[in-house]
Length: 232
Length: 232
Image 1 (cartoon, each protein chain N blue to C red):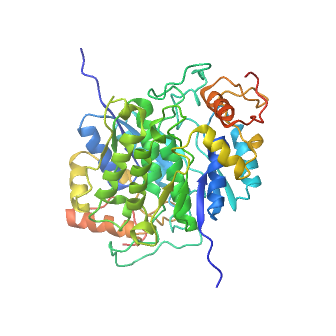
Image 2: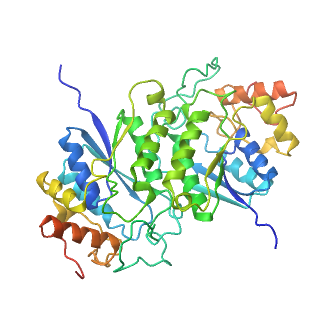
Image 3: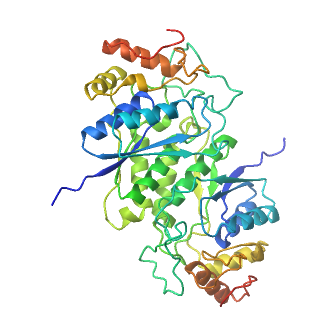
């Protein structure tokens, strides 16, 4: 009898971290079901990137979920009255204005529902607690608490059909390490999108936290970032 | 200086349990912000009930969130190919087919995002682990795990602005106790809707688990259920 392929749900924003995470899950031989959200983010161009990345990396499925605008408020990523900070010194001990209330919790909750409905027990999320912006919902202690909750929340876990695991393969990597592993696994970073503040054309700004962390990572890894920045 | 009114987010399905929970939160002097979901449930008539209940109980706000159909699958409550079981003996040690994967986790995650964005730290949910259908995400250990996760997930908690509390005032009550307290607090149960399997007119069936638990509760409490059942 052929070995049954294990399924996994991968949160895929279309950025560098989640694309690399998808490549890692694929390397682990999971049948990868990608999950992307449109949640009123100013940089919704990333959804197109997610589509291209899922396709290029051979995802078994890709689901795009719309979250009603207004569910997330008070963040520079969703509120047109709050500007995305540019050119700032990143201090990850402080939570920046780009924090979106409970975003990863909502994303992981949908991933959990999706996983349970397709019979998957592995969820992958590309959170990173090294070269990051200081978001509380990227830390290992948060992920651990979510995983514990997930195993109490669901019929599949309670009936001992399996145990949900929130996989965070890049959580302790530097941005440079993530990029090097991604390149080795065949990620085409020209398809990805990281910028919080893209031009109308989709061109990344090179000045927001996300662009700066990415550019620094490429420089440290010794590779050229294939994106065409407005400024760098 | 006038004492600042504390805000709370109340998950309000429009059913008996959540209406009573809203009345209890109001009794605790919270400014109550109700949150209701349209998630492709067959009994979406409950959303109208939620609106009427929120209005009658003087909620400070009421938000209705649409969850993309298809996020929840494999449940008799959302899947047209799976029938809602009728006239069955309820065995709460077994999880029934009306279980919706990770539903309360998604609902509570939205409540957390909403609470953080309006500066509330109290979330109320009308889960009940006594006269219930055996759903894993109604149990105290699940709620406790969610609360712990919430306090690691959010900027407001990490910055020590407050501590999120998931309030479950009716979790250990019998259905009869819930009804008695609700009547004492002025809940108009004629506005509520509990049926999983309503007629096209919205009339409750009297035969699904939810109707049966409700009718038993009213009988034990010694009150007449004001709803007009198709069968009882």
